[in-house]
Image (cartoon, rainbow, N blue to C red; front, side, top):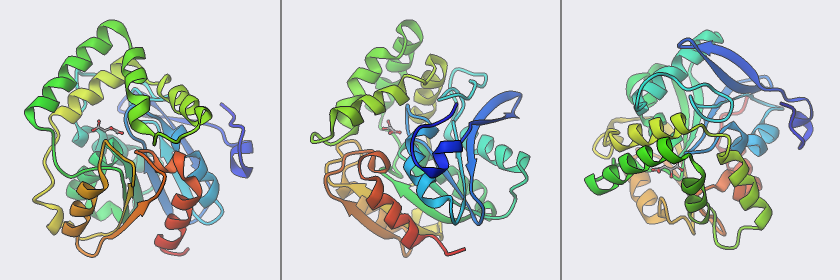
Length: 275
Ligand code: MLT
């Protein structure tokens, strides 16, 4: 696939590699210290194009599609836990011979995966960016809702889930073209990938009581109009993370990298250790 925007994107091609006996698709662009971006649900690596474009002159930017999303194949199983996604990412990094600590940026579900990376692979991580995510797990009502959604997606496909999600993902003032772009990205998710992620999110670990012991240089990004991960909850989470910086972005819902790419790029440039 060849993308249409920006200098890097002009020549950017999706790479593929076998991880856990499945094809995993990713972008790998630029040179320098490594930063890896982990997309939210039910999105893909395409949501980070503006960040890839902005950072690839100073950093090596890795952007995988999680199993079952974008162009990556599904793995086996009814559900994929956040820990399994984290293991998958570590196997991916090892396979492409990146064993030194890297910076990691996760959005929402990507953030849930980041907690597992910090908990289980602290030696592989340097700086951390958490966008629109939470440390707490699902309560039983939310978890049950996800299990019902997973069944429905497997039986009827992803269309109605996608339709229901768009208004919640972006701020009300978002343009029609941004909404269309988000929809297009979500339409590449497979039913098996979506159902597996729903199952995995419904049983994820509660990291709320562990944030204090996870000592990483961290930037927390919230959107003023985010109704999925409200800024108040994110600010509370940031308070428990030792020395974390908290940034609230105006005119922004749940998807700051797409809704306010210039602001996010600027925050990343200021935060990330210089090459
Ligand atoms: C996401 O954006 O990844 C989802 O909103 C996460 C969730 O459903 O908890």
